[in-house]
Length: 230
Image 1 (cartoon, helix red, strand yellow):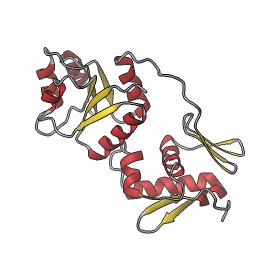
Image 2: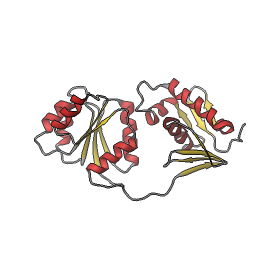
Image 3: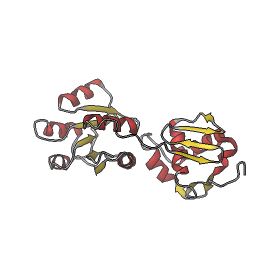
Image 4: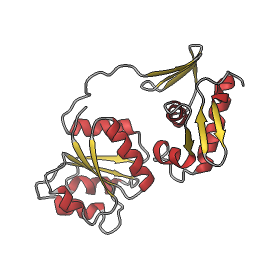
């Protein structure tokens, strides 16, 4: 656990929710701002070890913020943006950004870059986290799902949806919660996106697909004790 305090500036509320959750799960404290208007004051408060900054913000753009921080004693800035043009990257570095991460991205990549910029290394080894339900096993760290020790080919997003549900056994999880917490980096994600992922997961899991029950009008529930094929 690093304990470092980060300032996250992101106006996409679904993405911001996923980022806050992911960064906190990796041991960081996170303060979130959703507009650019008050970023400079927060950045100069001395309360943050690093800033993760979107470029396209209401009130004040990321470039304007970088320009105001360029010659002042502020934390290092990692730019996190959907803008991928070379000119945008070069301009960000010229204005003092220490790194540039394009969207979409994996939270693990962002965490690795944050840790590297803060000199934190890879962190201490953690116990392996595997969820087991009969013959079904979900390795949360390796992102591997097996049935009777045979790997099941899930996409990264399908694995994340399954793992999120399986970590909340017996609880009804709203589709909106899955969109905000599991699919924040996918543009245009909505309830239909979630349904499509669940349909594919059920098919790939075969008899174990019955463990993902539909909660009509709400979302889905993972049933750990449900008989396989029931």
